[in-house]
Length: 180
Image (cartoon, rainbow, N blue to C red):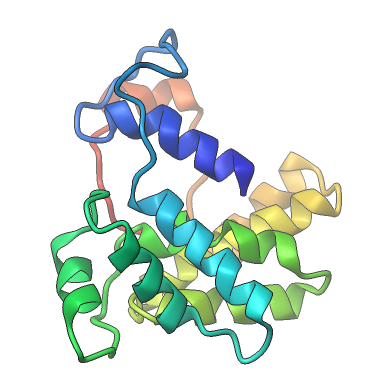
């Protein structure tokens, strides 16, 4: 969770002006937490409440407490609406906020089930919960000291993500895409 939050703050200055340069300052005067940090904290708060995890309530409460953090348009409508139904998102928000789930459980099945629960509050598109589960599983396996190869094989096999390209190849043609 701390890594996710640090990454959010470090990356905040590049969110809408991407860079492929490997040399950059980790923190600048413009670095700040974004919606991803707020919603990560919301997921952690929901987990600390115990089952049934109040993801919907905590996500909305934390978002409203920090309303100007860069939420997407559809999420903003959801957070201000009395309709608390999910809106079919397959954006990366469900994966960005799931790190507390990947840390919280000692059982893979429970980790994946709760990752989906945390996602489906807003991201009830299959790609939305697939992304959340892939991130949570990666954390779960890493905590179990699985090798990078084992983790990569599972994510590719179970979720269909192509992890075969080296980062140097991805950088050449990378374009930002916020889908999960």
